[in-house]
Length: 192
Length: 192
DNA sequence: TGTTAACTAACGACCGTTAGGAAGGTGAAT
DNA sequence: ATTCACCTTCCTAACGGTCGTTAGTTAACA
Picture 1 (cartoon, helix red, strand yellow):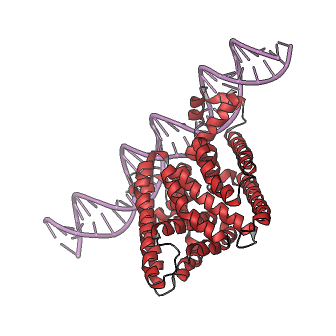
Picture 2 (tube, rainbow over the protein chains, first blue to last red):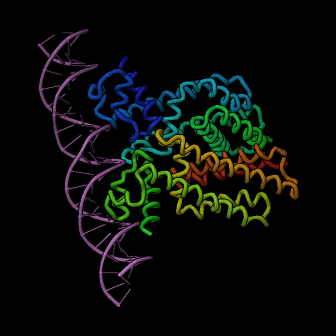
Picture 3 (cartoon, rainbow over the protein chains, first blue to last red):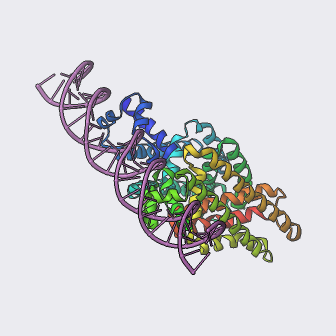
């Protein structure tokens, strides 16, 4: 239980300060233990970081999958658009997302290999699932303008990333401004 | 001359390693001087960072303005789409952009105020110029679907940011994949 | 009895920073 | 024209502090 608390605290610090900026001293203090006690759980900073990373990726993967499964009965538009509303509700604990976005774009140089080795499959899976969703839904709804589902999925990802990055840094208001600006345009371009 | 070299080198290091991850030792070594010599030019790490930041913002601002002025005679579509091609050509020296994106999303905590105080006006100016461009061009071309030029500008910014962020981290190939995926959708959604 | 998770103490390395001085150029006064 | 004071830019040496890490120990628990 202290172990998972340590992991979550570390994750929060890494999200906020980055790998180099996060200090084991402060993490331990936040957890309520002394710095060397971390070494009872992890080999060192690197292992703590990479463990936090796989944890965040795994959690977010199932978290996202859960959403799209739960909206199976909705229309494609409601599914795709509703994701943004859902994200906003769930976003109280956005540390994981912030962490993932941060290290995806700006990984610690000394761990670049390990990071991309874990991140790329994550985004690939996201895109693959999204592509499948688009194809299957379009088979019944027949509303998409193009049958290049892979590009559509990638475009959707770009929009979500763009708005979410805005969210983790500039907050809810800026996020909603961006979303209401781009969604009508994106959707109009996507369907017949 | 050594001063500007120092500034550019620092900028590159900050872009690559972030504020906390960048080391004055390594910056000085890259320039070819000793670490304390930096203090002949700047009060300290903070001033070096903030100077690099204002330098990057100023340069990029005029750089971007130059592009959009130079395409005054082109159609709106060519202007907006051409920006991506232009960006790709100019991207050999992408350190400034990477630097700006990085600190915009993940500023050093201790300098958060100063950073947002400089960054926000930058993006506001970008959006304002873009809004004006859309309005003026649409007055003659009359092709946009909506007359909410401000939203259109924000949507365009989201697309550019999303693809460029992909560029600075995942390289040209990933960038082009994203761009060719989202541009047709975006443009179809934008015009009548 | 062995394992786990915590502790204190301390390590070497690196951090940003300061002090103090040497070399070179600039500009004004002699 | 030469001298002298000054400023800039670099240097070496060293500072206090924090970094991640290790050693060795203790208490609780299985």
